[in-house]
Image 1 (spheres, helix red, strand yellow):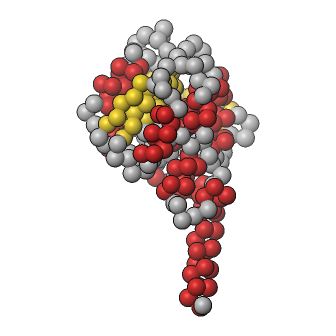
Image 2 (cartoon, one colour):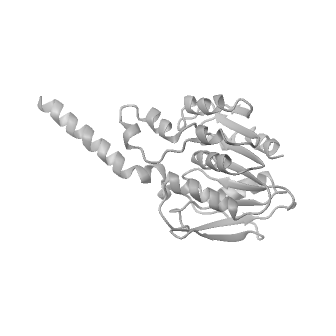
Image 3 (cartoon, one colour):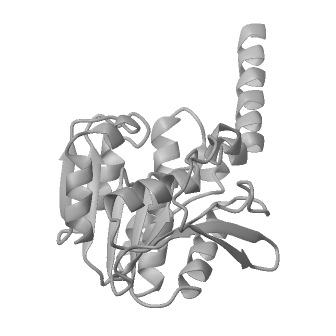
Length: 250
């Protein structure tokens, strides 16, 4: 009986700790690396939203008539690193990426609801057609934008149908559905999208379980899909990713 009680106490303490620290687990700002050197023509952007000030970059492309690429990075990506990556893929197009709120130098506190609302404000600050590209958790942000605004196209890399379901699948022994506060219902949001969609799924993804990516794909029968034999992070080194991304952006 003492062992059972001790086990129950430890379990409750573990659940309480995860609930308390879930913001830092979902948004690990401390893991973000330093920014890379950016092209000389890079513009620094600032967007004041009242409760937060977002900082971002625009790397101009060669053809301003082409749609602006609006990027949403993974939760441990430096936004400027994503901007440079997208610029190298599509140098003809303008690339805009903002640091999520709570991620320096942006201010405020990160949450799923805040990031999704910020995406709408960022989009509305731009002019002309916009192509949204989301990586990992950024795919949930891009999906929300796609459901609320008319876009030129939507590209989601290592996506999911619901961030809460990702957490539940990853921690099946915990009452995630009652504790998780940062859901991004990507599959639900994408039902209102009218733009062409391309999905990139890592078949050995150790962060986004395959059922979650497949569940999103099942709700988007008209989406183009590329499955790569890669994990969640090394998909960016897969030799087929960059050519496929270029085709999707064209």
